[in-house]
Length: 411
Image 1 (tube, rainbow, N blue to C red):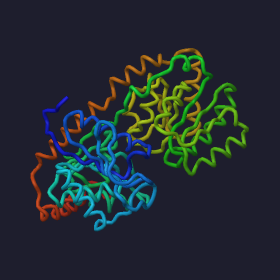
Image 2 (cartoon, rainbow, N blue to C red):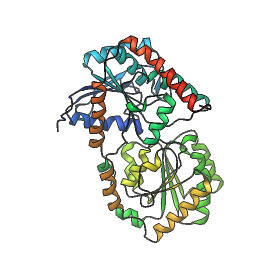
Image 3 (tube, helix red, strand yellow):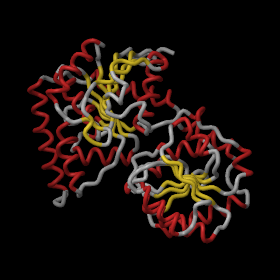
Image 4 (tube, one colour):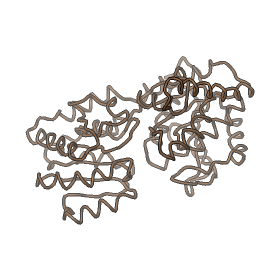
């Protein structure tokens, strides 16, 4: 299928890509595949992963540059504009790139590519996948040094939910007219239900995610013993790893729940479906979330989702039939789990096959790619900006900040 828009030569840039597993990595991979199907020329630029260096070709002819940059922390490269400039410039010129699309606020490589590409006169687009606060030290540093000065000259910005858009506009002091909302998606054909296991397995609650504070691992430590004490047949399966894993293992040891709480550790993405198919209920305990692809994957496999009411999560799935929302309070989440467990045992949950078909209608990558290319068209049609006008952009940022302070003295 060829798109009437373009075709464009696009560089998707981020520190986070395959073989690493995660929401940003999955987003970039499937977006690239669908953009290629639409007739665009796409390359991915990321840093090297172990022995994976240089140029690799993935399925559908996707070309990936694994550049030899130093990884500083948690998969993100060490920011060094001078060091990365010759590498990125060479790739942009070799591939005749027209549009640079950076992903993730945490990715130093994405922000450097946007800055260097802008100086080269290329069009720039950025997708924000996360939510941040405004008061803690890391948020202040990120908002001021990264967003306000990296994104002020970006042509177009994409957020994965309306909550994320509001958050990004406020944090980055951005013009909301150049920020679009395009949700994530999943490849629903890879997340199909297993009705036999859904009906015959004992009631099983699944958690898949990083075991860190932001993902609510502490909430899990409170929730699991209370649920297990009330329901002798309920079991939990936890997939993921992180610094909070030891606390979950200590909880399992303290309450002697070894046979009822299975901890799988880090899972490759191709095993997620097999784990989800073992359960009927999926729990998401995140304390902040822009979109949360894992709940869509769970719903596609036919599971009922119990989630904290945070960030963009309420926008993702229809409430009651697909998802039950509660504040991030352990007792509230436990009460909701009891209700859903009771509905499951009475056979009142939606048929998993029906749920899968509905999710397939809601989320698909071809639709995301078509909407994304409209953003590329907006970026391509935006007025060209000289280096001087880009410097003046920081003056615009200052004016916006002044206006916001006039309206809200506590801003």
